[in-house]
Amino acid sequence: AGGAEEFQLLQPQDPVWVSAGENLTLTCSVTGLAPAGPVKWFKGSGGDRQLVYAQAGSFPRVTRAASGSDTDFTIRISDTRPADAGTYRCVKFKKVSGAREEDKKGSGSDEEIRSGVGTAVTVSGFIFPDRHQVAVSAAAGAVCVLLVVLVLVSTYFFVRKKRGECSISTSLSQTPFPDTTRTQSQPSDDKDPDVLYADLQHPARLQQPKQSAPEEHSEYAAIKVTPAIAT
Image (tube, rainbow, N blue to C red; front, side, top):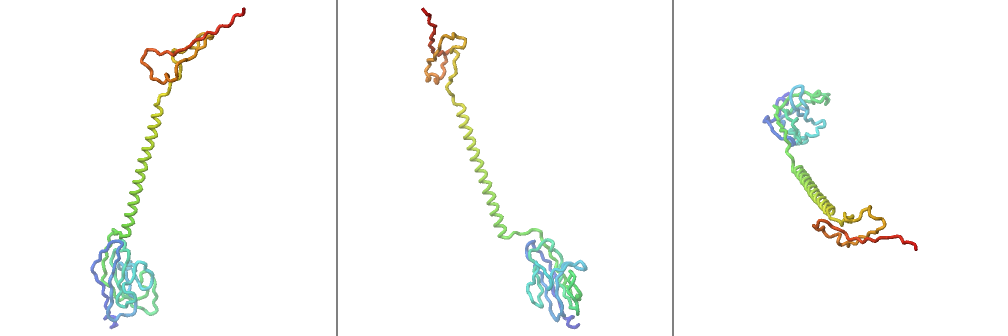
């Protein structure tokens, strides 16, 4: 009992502020003659307190700063989150003969003999990206910009190509061709069937531009075919 009275548990009570994603360090140490039993960390108080760290159990984000030490029970919480905010207490237990480590609150059948004053922790919600994340984000942004530029350039040349094809097609459709149809001066079907007509106009003349004369006439030769009279 006298050894237990000389025992002291030291936990700084100054508030701690961290940003989400950073590591949180909570300091706790014991001095004097401490009775046999574990030292555990809790968040909150009373019956709703939550076990944060114990020597027995699995706590993925929590490690001891001085593993194996009998006096230093400082812990580190990695990758903090807004839900980690709260008041943390370091608690010393005395081992009771025949007790077992049980229940999630970590008290089991051990007797609690001393608790720290508590350390208030505030975790901001903004997560500061590390250099690797910044580099990856910058590279991804550069790739996106390059893809957009390539798409714009490809669209530009595609449109220019289409416009060029349309221009060529329009030019061809507007090219005049020689008019080989009959002029109004050609003989119609109501002429004498016994007369044969032949168009004597030179082909090169057909391609010449039309004159401003009132009328144009083609030159024809008429041959009259008369049946022979038997004598």
